[in-house]
Image 1: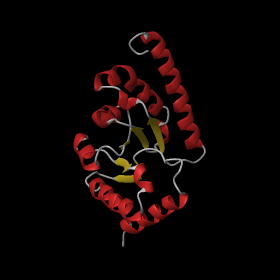
Image 2: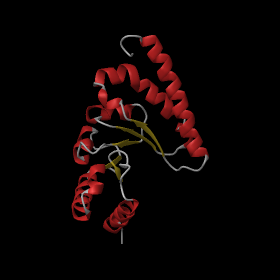
Image 3: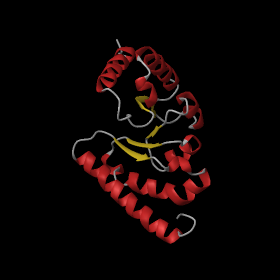
Image 4: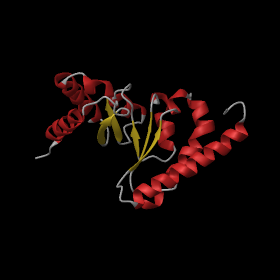
Length: 179
C-alpha cells in the first residue's frame, strides 16, 4: 500500500499516529511514568522506506506526549538496521528485540541512547538455568548503554507459566540490586 497507493497510506498512517498518540496520552494521564510505541511491523521495512513512509508518523505519535516529560520508548521487532532512525523519531529510549545483542545496539546508537530489552521470550520455557544464564548475558551487554531497562525482546508467549516471570523478575532484582 505504501508504494501502490501512497495517498491512502499517508491517510491511514496519520490516523494510526493520532490514535496511538492519544492512547499514549491516556496512559500518562492514568498515571504511567513511561510509555512505549510498539511497532511489530517496522522491521519488515528497509531504512529508506522506514524514513520515507513511517518515521514521520512515529514522530507524530511520540510528539503528542512530549509535553509530559515522561520517557518515550520506541520498540519494533526486527529493527536492528532502523535503530538510529527510530531514535530520530523522538524516542528517549530504544527497545531492542531479542535478535540483536544490546552492546551492538548501543554501538549502532553511538553509545548515546538508553536501551530496553532484550530477553528472548522463547527462553522463558527453556528452564531456569538456561534462562538465568541468558538474563546475565543481557545484563552484561546492556551495561554498555547509558542506561538499560530489562524487558523481553518481544511479547510473552501465551503458554508461559506466570511463575517463571515472577521468578525471573526476582532474579533480576537480586542481580541488579545496588548496595
